[in-house]
Length: 382
Image (cartoon, rainbow, N blue to C red; front, side, top):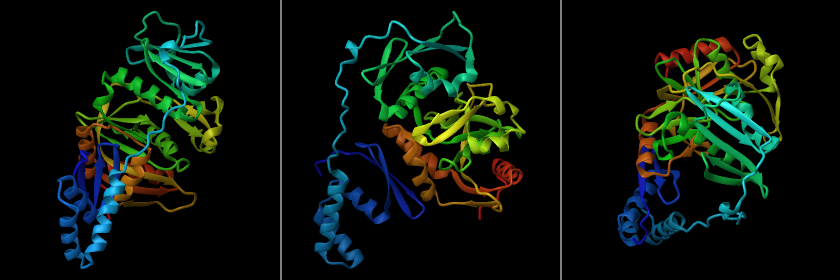
């Protein structure tokens, strides 16, 4: 076969997860389909594969040939790359001479100076990190610049151009800002991260559990309840895992609390009463931010459990171990996963050995007790 695309395969339950190097995509395939792909990638002819498949499935040869040719076309079809409408050379962009807002954030012993050209850029970043703000400091460790030009948000770190994003891609800028932050905090380059997950990471000082769930399911609320009951918030929304030790690393952003959760949490966090509200029209949500109880942003811990959590009014507590394939298909679309082959292999190996649970609850005390049991490996997996 002429195509030099590289693949990785990981059998999981009754399927095979396949990673495609040319696109950094993961697909869950039937085992027979994965086997055909393996043989194609090794240069075995379509006719030879089709004959074996025809005999195995007892179907006409022309049908198996058509199936394999169609699969080959879908797998190797060239995908068009969406080009940015932004044509300016960033070297010709003049940085503003005046920045309306300058903030200083202290994380561990590092001081980040972040300059924003207007309130719009400030709004994209500051709410999640306001709890880290300090007064003007002369001991600057890193300097970030964020400014608007030609309807694009530009981002520089220590005088190096990082990128520019249009309004419709602004979430990519926010992700890149967070990535640059964790690289500086933990002294790791981008290639040293296995992935970043849209989840909440809760620790008991020995290991961590990742909580996942659709927006509105109560993921961040559950995190806030847990940190008020002896657990530590390691990260919320942006959960980085390093490739070397496969540990979850701490991230200093605040916990986002939706408006309908404030009343539940006020007895535990009275400071929410007068905290600022932020309206995110694009996501149709109003949130307040809660300071995480983590004070050591160097910390990192292993993770062996994923929990899909859902608050459902007046429901009995339900906890069950769920299909890893089901969990994989929920986890991957919202994640950034390293495009490097060795990191992809580590991700597949890590996911293969973790436990995946679903918790539905309405009683906070029962939820906290169940999570405690998961931490102690004392949960009924049936």
